[in-house]
Structures are given as C-alpha cells and as structure tokens.
Image (cartoon, rainbow, N blue to C red):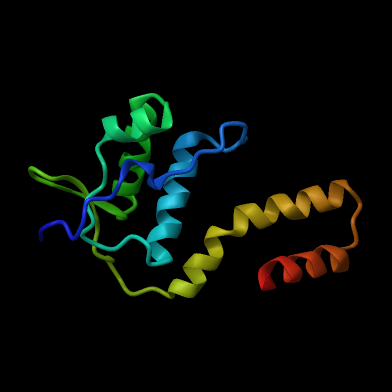
Length: 133
C-alpha cells in the first residue's frame, strides 16, 4: 500500500496547561480524526522530528504517542515510509467508538458541574445549545 497523502505536522493541537499529558492528547486527537474521517487508512504520518518541532515538544513525547497508536492498531510501520494510518483491523460500531472518545471530556464536565453545584438540567440545556450552534 502506498501512502494516500502525506499528513502535515500541524495535525495535532496541544493544550499546554491541560492535566492530560501531551502524548495522550496526541493519541486521542488522532483517534478522533480517524474515526471522524478527516484522516484515512494509508495516510502517511509526519515524522517524529517534524511534529516535535511544530509543537515545540520533546521528540520522545511524539515517539511515545506514535508507539501507543501503533500498539493499539491505529498506525503501522511501512519500510521506507515511516508510520502510516492502519487499515481497520476489525469491524466496529464507529458511532459507539466516536462517542467513547468524548467520555473523558464529559466526565470532566460532570465533575466540574458537581463541584460548582450546578443542576444537571441546566448543564444539559447548555450542552444542547452548544451542539445546535
């Protein structure tokens, strides 16, 4: 399989003040982009060096994210090409997987809402408004 396209080094957007480690942000972002269809099987990943330079992070951080994505079956190594997005290994319910990817964000919203003693109905109303905008 040849690479469908070379992905740019700026496919990742890092939140530096987040409690979530940078490598984990990268893993989750790539998973969301694959499941959302923005990134397809066969697309060539930018090099570790390119991504580290673009984000201003240690290359070991990028390497750790790529290694996790490879071990989970999201990326595969191709001789002479580096890492490419893997073909889906098995059939799965994409809607269910996409929904699971936002669970950590929703769990943080629930925790913050509870800490602020907000009524669940008010939070749900706000979420519905934000989703329809």
